[in-house]
Image (cartoon, rainbow, N blue to C red; front, side, top):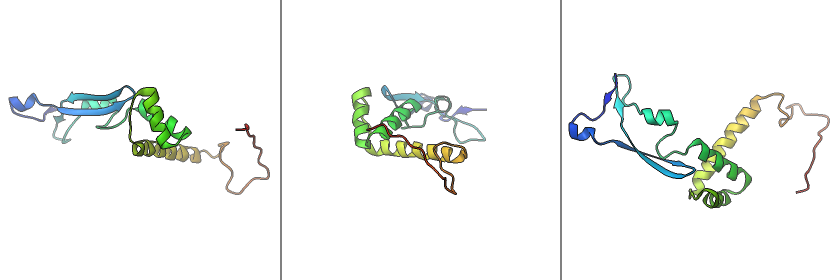
Amino acid sequence: MWRCRQRSADAATRKKTLKFYTLYGVVELKERIWRSGEVSYHRPLTERLAISARGYTRELQRAVTDFGLDHSFATAAGKLLEHYGIELPVSSIRKYVETNARRIADESSKLEDSPNCLSPSGVDQIVTETDGS
C-alpha cells in the first residue's frame, strides 16, 4: 500500500520538483513521492517517463550522440544550439557519447560473425574501400 510521504495537510500540498532535459528544452514538473513498507520511496512519473532527475530524454541522448560521433564535442554543442536551441555543457556531451560508444562496442564485440571484427587469429586478406574523402 502506497501512502503520501508528507503527513500533515500543509506538507501534502508540497511536491518534489522533477527537472529534466528534452529536445525542446528544460522541463520542470511537480511530482508527488509515495512511500511503502518495502521501498523508502516510489516515483511513478519518473518510472513511466523512463527519466531521472536532471537527466536527458532518450531522444536528446540520441541527438547528442549523433552529433558527438560525427564532430568534436565542442562542435556538437554548437550544433545542438543551432538545430534545437539547447545549450549543453561539453562535458555532458562527452559523457553521453563515450557511454553510448562503449555500449555499442560491447554489443558488437559479442557478435562473433560481425563484419566489423577481425578474427583474433588473423586473416589472409582484407578487402577495403575508400570513398575519397
